[in-house]
Length: 171
Image (cartoon, rainbow, N blue to C red; front, side, top):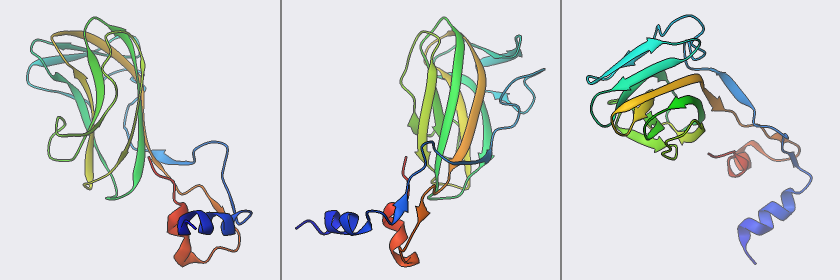
C-alpha cells in the first residue's frame, strides 16, 4: 500500500481545511493607488503616472514596467494578485527573486486584455519584487495589487507536531 495514502487515511478526521485561503498581512505598500503611485518605481524604459486609482505604465521598449520590493521569508508560500484594467499591449504580473524585478521566479499568463493575474510563489530570498511587466511597447493600467503570505490554515486534531509538515498548504 502507498504509505502516503495510508498516512492520509489515518489522518482522516484529524485535520480540518478552511473554505478559503488564510493569509497574512499585506506586503505591498500603496497597492490600491488611491491618490498616487508612491512606493512604486519604473524600469529604465518605462514611465509611470497615477490615473484615477490605477498606475499607468508606458513602456518604450520590450519587457519594461513598474515594480516594488517587499520582505519575504525564504521557503514560505505567498499569493500575488493584480488587476490590469486597461491594456494596449501584452503584459503579465511577475514575481522577482530579490536580485532584480525581472529575475522572475513566477509569472502570470501573458495577456493583451484587461485581466486578473494570480501568481502563487514560494520565496527564495528575503526580498522579492512584484513587477507589472509590459512584454512589448505600449500602455497598461493596473489597479489593486496585493501580495500576502499563505499561512498554514489547517486546524490539527490529534496530529503530532513532527507529522504536521506533510499537511502544509503549498502554492
